[in-house]
Image (cartoon, rainbow, N blue to C red; front, side, top):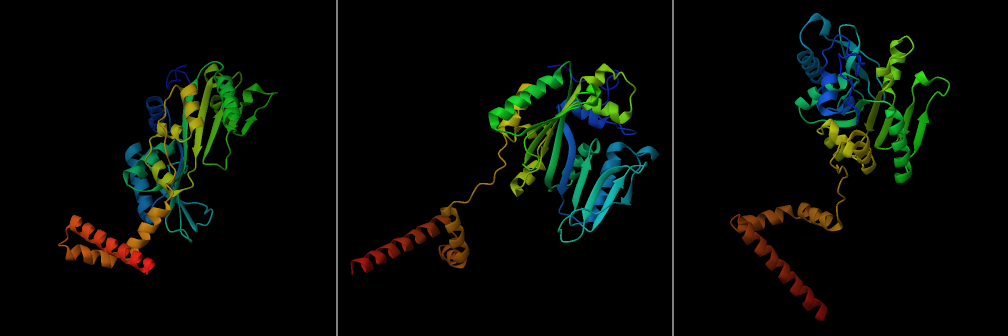
Length: 323
């Protein structure tokens, strides 16, 4: 597997950090993958969440005029009534906090180079529920995109996944993208020529430098639809997301030489027996507590007494049926 391009050696940066220190670049190099999008519900007051974000981001970026942040109004979306953004000194969004309306808790969203920082701030302050997390891995090498595209084709056939390829045959410098899986499902994979896209966004003169041409990104979009999955997604490290499905784990192993431990995000379905026991305890809780107190708060003695009562009841049932 080819080595990743390193910042400062003439290779393209992993993202346009602008005035920010290379924290996201370091994340890509050391962990192999990093957050590229982070959206979460935070059970706290919006003003407190904004304070956490502003102070946490400032602490991570350093205190100077170039990295100073401020709060600016945004555009409300979905069913939220308000949007407040934490912006940098140039007015660019660091994070957005949507709140108000029928939503009980605010929603925080960050993307690009700010996603790892905002995720770190939220995790520092405890429980939240992640509703969308994108994790990206960058690599560089000759014919790497073609190799990954071939792997995506193979996985789509093996697992019955939808596959879509976007390319411009008349302009090889425009870059291509492969989509694997359904965008409406929990897990979706994008593989694209990140270097060519960046070169186009930055308006680089042609011919495009070879370092940009070889730069490829694989990006997981994970949107858990159940609460256990959202809770797990809020504490998982970036590399762990490659284990949320079997086919994604296989992609990580073959394309990235990365083993991802399988992650079970499914909520265990309650059995009929567990449901019956739960309702029994809820209905007879006061009676069970009385038996426990009558037995001197001795758990073993209380259980024996309940068994005795059950045996008496069973004997009575037999006599009634025999009569």
